[in-house]
Image 1 (cartoon, rainbow, N blue to C red):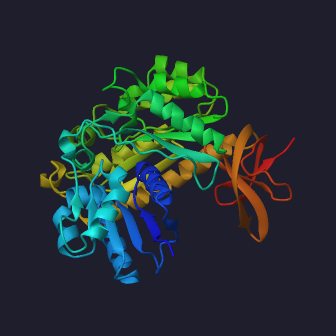
Image 2 (tube, rainbow, N blue to C red; image 1 turned 120 degrees about the vertical axis):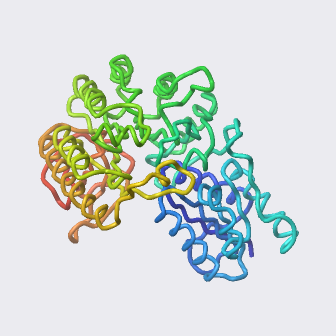
Length: 437
């Protein structure tokens, strides 16, 4: 009987892409991919370290794998092992540790470990801070065969005062355009109709290659079978009238823009080492709204940043109420060892973070509902992905270009099809009927 491997992903869309790529590496090597349950011979956990909670979940999943099969090889991969290497190795949770830029060596590392079990170095890492090579990972398909993440960039040079990711991922490294295009074509040949461009700092794509993100988007747009291009998280600085006009000229680009905010207060933004003001961020939203009709703009906000006064927090509340974004993802500040913010005086209590988080989540829900109400009755196009049961009835569920979730009766199979209709009534929280003409 062949070897069985189980994978578990934690963290961002980049991690999700890399987990899919490692799954394919194992499949090509003859492993049977099985659920993350007892019975696997190899467990691969792609870890995350963006918050303390992410660290804890990474440790928990490693220990869960060890309990599920004490004789299995447990492999810890990714960001957590870059920033907390000794705890991973010392507590015995992982047999094998692979740092970032070493995931491509997964199968070889497992085989070498098997040959020298309980002997040799169980860790494989590069000096990530000095790495200039983009790691050669790729995927050919996704389980859904509809929408695929497409990683085009790694690393970050920003060094925001709260963020450990530049230390875990290294400096900016862009993937060659020809490699991106080849992967996009392969995905399209295998049924994928939408690609989501992802990276650790997507806006910096091409800065090390003498090209740009816009140039890459334009090249992908020329692939006939790719019908939608969705963009991952962008920095506000990339949004200019020229950039947005160029995107608008590409009808495959979805009017769904995730612009990282983090705070609506200028003094907090300065302590965070974010290089814009709230007014400048609002101007970027205006540029998008002047070109696109009701674009979906989403963001991330951190509450309880060190020294954040109640007045500063209220500035963020007021700003978010004014700017009215489609979705706001709220994160309570998490001190990361080695970052400047962790050493700042005036750390906010967990109780206060919780109170402030609840305020912003409620406001975010109100803004989301307002946006969806504004879109009601509009003509939209939806790409349907999967069959779901909603209140006892079967529906096919998918997303509009704005990433509004829609449903249509499952009487007719429409998986992986793009259908046009009006955005109708709600059938579940934030799920709307697509009413055909």
